[in-house]
Amino acid sequence: MTFYRNLTIKQKQIVWAWAFLALPVLFYGLIRFYPTGTAFLISFQEWNLLGARTWTGLDNYIKLWNDPVFWKVFKNTFAYLLIGTPVSLVLSFIIAYHLDKLRFMHGFLRMLYFLPFMTSAVAMAWVWRWFYQDVPIGLFNNLLASVGIAQISFLNSTTNALPAVLAPAVWAGLGFQVIIFMAGLRAIPISYYEAAKIDGVGWWTVLTQITLPLLKPTMVFIVVFSSIGFLRIFDHVFNMTTNNPGGPLNSTKPLVLMIYDTAFNGFNMGYAAAQTVVLFMILLIVSLLQLRLLRSE
Amino acid sequence: MTIAPDVPAGIRPTTDAALAAPKGKPKNLGQIIRWLLLFAGGILMIMPIVYMISTSLKWPHEVYNVNLIPEEPTIENYTYVLEDGRFYWWFVNSLIIAVITTICNLLFDSLVGYTLCKFRFPGRQLVFIAILSTLMIPTEMLVIPWYLMSQSFGWLDTYWGIMFPGLMTAFGTFLMKQFFESVPDDFIEAARIDGLNELEIWWKVAMPLVKPALAALAIFVFLGNWTAFLWPLIVTNSVDMYTIPVGLSGFGDEVDVAWELIMTGAAISTIPTLIVFLIFQRFIIRGVVMAGLKG
Image (cartoon, rainbow over all chains, first blue to last red; front, side, top):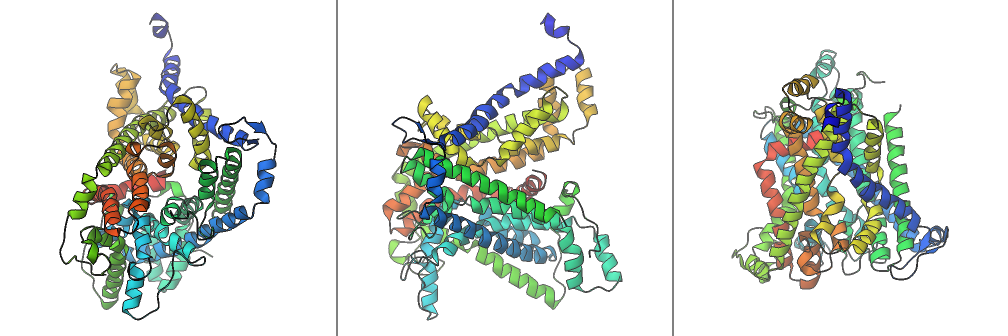
């Protein structure tokens, strides 16, 4: 203790700081950085968990490039992103824009829109799966039948299944985006709107010249956040297609499901690791690109 | 051309006043139509949840009817599912894991955030950037190495195995660091002069000042762990160790077409978070905004 007592205040601070950080630094090193390195390493190896790990260089990546399933999965993953992100952005903005202008039972309406965010993806995937069943089981088709419309095949159709799986993911995330948009709308100083009123500007001009430009930081956040979510979609797809994960005919399979299958059903660890590296790259490129595009101008 | 200047993301006010629900009655026809449309949309939004609960209270023969209110409501499905015993364990497992992980995050994320915010020491910038950079690493990339790690240390199929990857998060650390910025250095200096050691200053002076941030973090971590699926699915093998989402996923396959039982399981996994939300609604929404805009 005499050693500690002889330190200057500044030196004591350094001792405390590193004492506080010791365990967390160990954690981040062992549970985040070391595994990241391992993932890259394994992606250059061939390994089925039981046998020996052998170096294969770029073989896993070459195999991936030539794998038609991978390209199908790649397309699906971007379909989730390219449909999911704009749809949820536009819907949540419209809801937030109008909700912001209402006072009567405002808190109650906000609650209705936010509630789905508090649900579990697995539970809701099963609820929606039931909605999508054929007559006489599924709710949607029963409703269609009651107004005399022929039933639609949702989860068994190679064209309808992907949007059907995406719908509950958009639904669950909407409330969060509405809340963020409303906070963004509230942050716009009222003086701008008052100035516009004095100038006699119409609502459309106010929307496009004041509201939307000022909401840009909010939109950047929402776009990046929801894009990452859609690129990593898994829970909904897995649970809505458990009888044939990613089916029918891989038409709903996203990259994360392919990774799960390759690693934990096929035990092809090297190949799966290569897929995770590709996912990492996609996430990195997409978020950097969006930040760049939306921040500039 | 824009009339208004750009507002940087960092300085947006997120005070209670900005978020408080405004009150008052709609004045004109336009407002009434707007209200009705939003109300209809809101009802549509909660329909999946309402149908889930409604169906969980129906007898099997009534499940395929689209009526919302069960003709003869029954709790038979709940009795059946809970008597089976597995849901009880999954519920307990999920609760234990979510609670412990939340406590760990509250302690460690705030301690690290506080240290990075209020201490000056060599390596500070490096530690901060290193932790922040882990935000770019997707969980999916780490599950294979985590699995191998768990296998070699015997962590497969244990609570520790399910929990260890989430005990600290970069998101939480960053969030807490942002909030500790608002704690005046004078407070800390005064406590130091009063003879408190650094651990006491963090716990007794700084922590009480960031309670709203701690609450926001707690909500996110708890909800995230309660609904987590991919990693628990990978790391658990025995039915007793499943968490609710993993258990529900297998249960749904097992009972196949008994939708009333699946809806009951889904309701059991969803109702606790809904109740928590309904009680702490304003608090949670404020937390979401703080975490969303500052984190």
